[in-house]
Length: 538
Ligand code: NAD
Image (cartoon, rainbow, N blue to C red; front, side, top):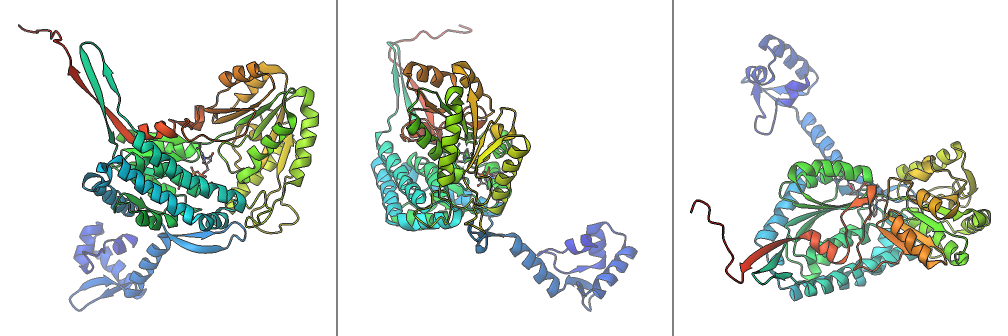
């Protein structure tokens, strides 16, 4: 029956019984029976010439179903009530965006602008972000549940991303290599259309962290933000246009990862994909990009250790450990979510961490006194709570939090949660929770600390606390992490390589690394002397 209805299309909107039998493969006598049934139900309408068409009711139902499928309802994490609908980009929307970006790349001025001119526009984008910083922070807080004070910091960093890459683009130079016989010089070209796929944690900052270097390199871009947090990205088109970015250089498509994101990854005119998100999604994207041999930058998950030795400045180490895991609601890729403490201070440290965690203010993200806001989405909230249950079930000792704070009867709130006596086989030690939950585990000596720090599939960040600097440097070399901080917390210098080892990622972003990713280097060889050419067949 469905096959009969599906035979109708905009091009074939009236069909005879014979046409229907031919296109569906259903024998004509059976087709007459089907047609009679469909006419009885009012789905099919016949005319005096013996041709049939779909009823207006069916067409409007189909249109409504199509429309319902092409929007995403977005809710805020405090009430979990939908506040907006966002167009869910389909593969053809991605195709339109890529076509516009490809045209802007091959025909438009952006890749050909002098670097100073490009830098001016990037600086104006930074100005535009700064002028809207308060608005961006408010939208981000509303959409993601991030505490407002921390969202303000992220908005400032977003502007800095553009300012930084504006500066860098004018200092870009191309290498030259010389021997006595040969001179080689490099031509560096923007790679083409860059596909940028970003997650819901600190969305605006992470979007700009990819947009700024891609545009600075002269690429044109298609951005696909995370479906749970589309709000702040919606300011970008206005900011870009106001700054004078040429049409088509920046394109934004909201949509579901498996539909719009996947279409961007599979699009043959997008040679580069920069992705930040979960490790499992990263695997799917790498597999989908493989047939096209695309350039990939993969910033993935983490389960980073914060190693505290007995000789460390414990006051500072505790401040840093708590900030490292509970800032940004614990929804932070570089969170130090496993605290490894030397056994001689372990018990005291657990007590101090628990006491401080109990005092962390969990509440309305818009309140400037809030330290932990609401987790982004009920699905994610349920996932984080399921890890709390797993920790309890596996026998870890809950010393702080573990449930919704009594002051917050609704919304995706979780009190700062500390598990002690966490063993390396437990899921809460091994898997990324991405919420305000930290594990504390004792160690005995340097070798044990290294073994525990490395006992994870991830390798994004590490934080080392000890007064013995020689030991700190030994550990920095031995711990498998893309980024290590010694006696300090996560402060970034945007020139430095950002990224992870093992399951935490592939490739590096930051400074020249980002520009390398978005450009292709070509070498031109020139002889400086007569070089002997072998004479085959002479
Ligand atoms: P996610 O992997 O679920 O989604 C990230 C983005 O990928 C979204 O835009 C989503 O729509 C899209 N996507 C999903 N499936 C896709 C597919 N098949 N093809 C193409 N795109 C697809 O991640 P998330 O839950 O939004 O973000 C949290 C994760 O991001 C955590 O694991 C966190 O550690 C990681 N993260 C890493 C870094 C880093 O720099 N290493 C930074 C921030 C977040």
